[in-house]
Length: 401
Picture 1 (cartoon, one colour):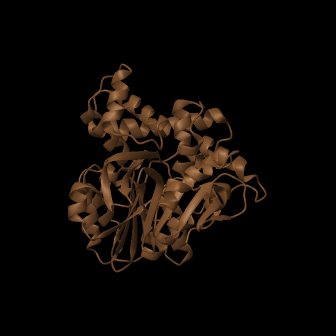
Picture 2 (picture 1 turned 45 degrees about the horizontal axis):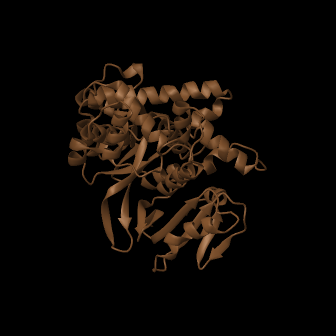
Picture 3 (picture 1 turned 90 degrees about the vertical axis):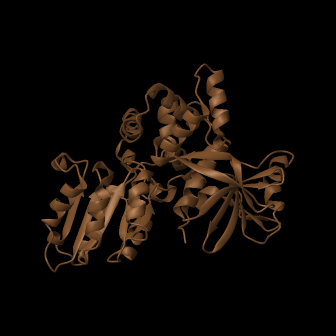
């Protein structure tokens, strides 16, 4: 069992704080396992078993719990008076009006509540209003590259592991599956559950085939600027007529279910957010290969996807940068300040033009915030007029700070 240290440390920091801890993320990214690890931590810290109540609302044992009132009654009948209770609810959105049950538990002084959900709308609408200021969201992703390689011998070839990581998937359970056909079947089952249960059933989209066409288009265009009009026009010209409004609805559902993450553009010179030119990155590249096959992908955009997810894990707010006529891959902002990242699979060529092109947007930025060029090139740490060129696998395997 991979410890998921960053997420575990976050839960430990928020333990016993008067806040509901809500862990969100794509299905099978490890949320339930994280709760299991945290419950083991509580027991090792002296919390008796009877003070821990764990309920997976997708488990058939709880099929009769369908409303928030029933959920609250079930939990309330199992609380121990005058003793601290740790309550874990997996996939709370399965229960209608679960928000009210959570709110009633929140006001009890002896309840510390932890919740998971596989959809962004878990924190939308009524819950956001009802529990405003009462919860903290912990955004969970599948395994990072550093977590993935932790199960392999330390002398393993990092380049080989990187290719396994993107092809075989970053979902934790795929490490238990040694056959490629089993991994593909497992990934397909994850995808089918998300599409059928989290999107089609909830949103009531009538045309599953059209939705799947949009999904395949998005996986095939990772890292490309993708306006809803461009997507609609491209699909219509290929014989799948679709409106811009329908594309917008599909993309919203896909991001709400954490299959894709949307990133917007920011004009570095003009200091303003731009309304056009969004990009989308996938929660897991293995899903792409499972759905599209192993046809040739843009290695640079796949690498961008991996870097984007790592920046998310490290707690950054991320934008695409526009610098005059050049594009900067990522502006990363956190409480410590701003950093700039350019990602290229390689900058080695015979005339140096590739390196020059990749450095151009970084050189055009006049402030003194840190600037990085991340590549797969096996070159020593290099500085180009203050811009640090780093091997991306070295960067991915450094523990975040």
